[in-house]
Length: 146
Ligand SMILES: CC(C)(COP(=O)(O)OP(=O)(O)OC[C@H]1O[C@@H](n2cnc3c(N)ncnc32)[C@H](O)[C@@H]1OP(=O)(O)O)[C@@H](O)C(=O)NCCC(=O)NCCS
Image (cartoon, rainbow, N blue to C red; front, top):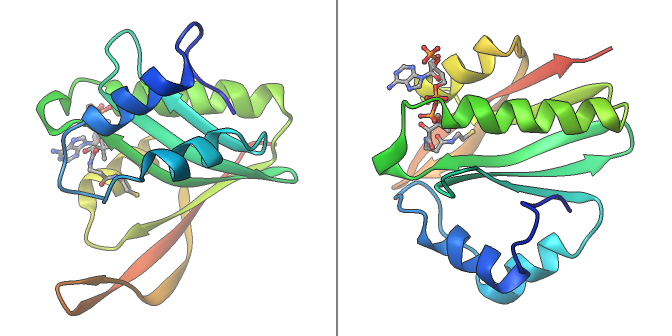
């Protein structure tokens, strides 16, 4: 697990749960702590302002991004790019070959962000998400590092 230096796990949860959004249901403290206690999981909190995070997991020589989220009051300030750059530095250190993720085909903002980092669409999962009873496909995107 990666996190900001000098922040204890309890405060990390406080920061995580204070990030305002309607995008995803926040994990309960015990699920969050169980996630970050697994050495194959990655949680990076944005800095210096703790207003966004990226959650990911390492699977052999790949990283899967589980989610990236910036507080809705702090978007479009480069914080998402900063978090992806942090993830790339970590991937480099760990000699990761690919980073992959799923993103709703309707999430143009996130797709733009990933394209900016040279992620490429490699497939599509049908009806992967359900939003108020409506099925939405997911793009599978991958970044090849070396
Ligand atoms: C997607 C998200 C993480 C982007 O974070 P952010 O901090 O606002 O993004 P940044 O300011 O670093 O912008 C990075 C790039 O994303 C794209 N982008 C960001 N906001 C955008 C918008 N409103 N419209 C179009 N593209 C946008 C641009 O390509 C931008 O690069 P640029 O500023 O050089 O043009 C943020 O909007 C968010 O938390 N969304 C809700 C959760 C979500 O959808 N997560 C992705 C799930 S897979």
